Length: 253
Image: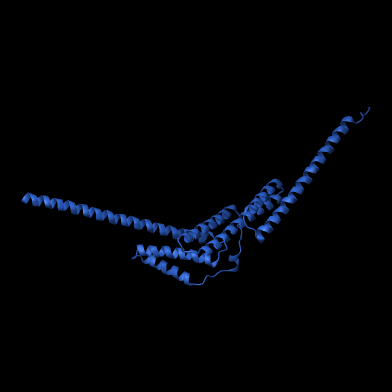
């Protein structure tokens, strides 16, 4: 009887140990998932803030700004739910809510696109637009952005990318032409022209730039023809001079 009691106690201890271990593992798993989710939401916030920082030269609509603000707010709300004792997160959530309630102050300059002077800034601008498109697409996939709004905003950003591409190529082409690098200028203009012709829509901007690029290319073509004709004439004159020298009457001394 005593031996049976001891065996039962041993079995009970084993069961308790297994149960405690299972509970501990479950808690550790929950904590790991909580930390993983916190890191995910933090990354969402950082990416959204990075988009705003790197997109200071991008003309954004009020709708786009609100989408970004809502994305940050929702991520902070999830973090507060995961860490309800964090005063810092609660304060940030409160500040985020206030930003969403306040009107958006915008200057007239924010409505226009200003191309950076150097390539590094230009690349950063293009990357900012790409991240904006990904952000809006993500919010739309979650059902937080209406389809019509998503399509309209994505089209705006698509047209913005086109303008940056075309304007930067034209700018390089003009600079190359000014430096008498006609071949390079033609390559830049041809690249811009191909980009304009590849779009599936037509508006005032695409029509204007297409006509402008056709003028540039025609002028360069005329310059090259004139240059070639001049070179041929000069070569012919040189050859004639050589013949004149060769067949000229020899002088008697």
